[in-house]
Length: 97
Image (cartoon, rainbow, N blue to C red; front, side, top):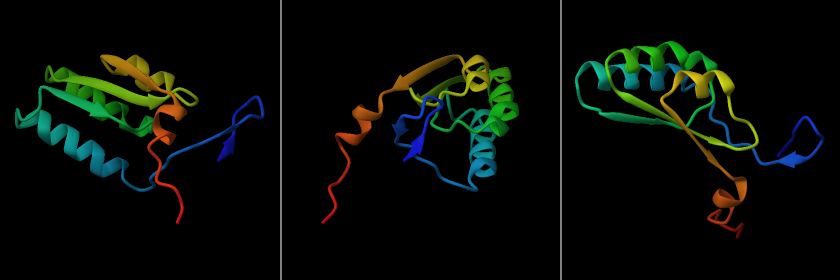
């Protein structure tokens, strides 16, 4: 949990150190012609050059993000953005044992 700009607690999902691997996978799939659409579930701005390369190769790139923290740069760079509500994800969260 973290505070949003208005001080409200929001649930944040993060994975560190995978942006390079995601970028390599995206570009490799696009270059090899193995993807017609890529769905990106990361808000890391460092991925924008990979997104541009994928789109230059005529592969659709969809940005899947949480409504509380969308990255405007990625939204602008991708073909389309899908916003998820935290409640849509947390309803499937496994309860602690």
